[in-house]
Picture 1 (cartoon, rainbow, N blue to C red):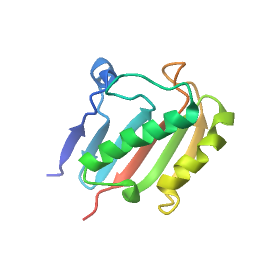
Picture 2: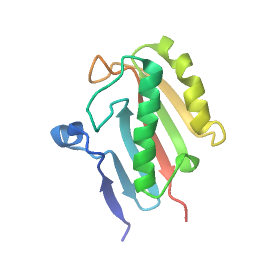
Picture 3: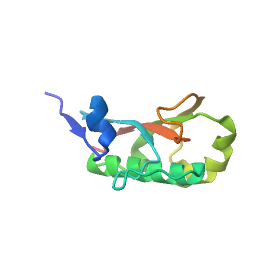
Length: 128
């Protein structure tokens, strides 16, 4: 039977809405849309670049719990309400994904909270 396990970050949103930060499904890891909230304090910066940095720290923690790293990411989806906020985030994203080169898409859309300026969703393959 294929292993299926939920990874929780401690975000109050996971409990309130009913989802997991990530799900391990065999050798695949699906990381939910992750914003720039600091889950320890449930606060979020007003700065999009700081939100991107925090979102990546949140994703990194979920990947680590799944036995992965950014090097194992095969697909990324970026979600931003304002397309003009995307280019300032590129250096942050390049530091994490520049050598990995996952398939990527950026979508302009509304997010759940008007303070949210950046959301990221990733898919990874667990190392053998």
